[in-house]
Image 1 (tube, rainbow, N blue to C red):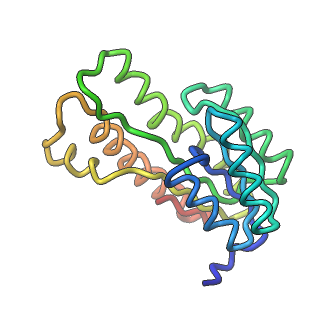
Image 2: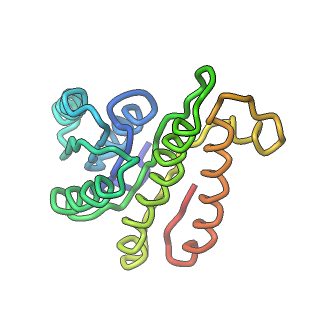
Image 3: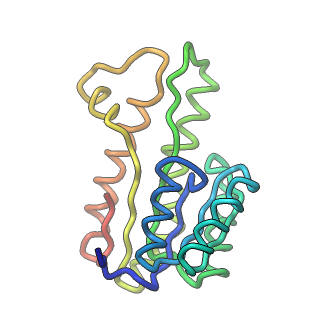
Length: 184
């Protein structure tokens, strides 16, 4: 399928495994240059080499922690330096569903997913708006619906973080839609 995005540049958070890795592969097969980030550089470089070899697109592997504001700013700068622009942003992170979580656990998970996604959007949206084109995909699970419907499970950040992502995505989408930028 030709999505008409060949030659664009994508930044994919959480790109070393799972949904992020699969997204990087899919975009690269469409001719999109990709920058993948995660906390483990060795795994990122392995995935980047696989994609680069198989597709021939430019692939950057950048170590970054989406809970650290400075890492996100540095990440976006590295992508712009290495690829020229960020045309597509895929925010992808994990929610945690293990046992009893402490207050610090909850704060950390909100910082990674909710604030990390928001900070990444704030870093790339001005450039997208300036050129009149951009795509932002914020990955959130179906647990968002459980939280919205009052069915959140104690000890799980999934519903709460995903509901926040859905809400933020809708608000940002409404704000930038007339600029040629979509947020989903």
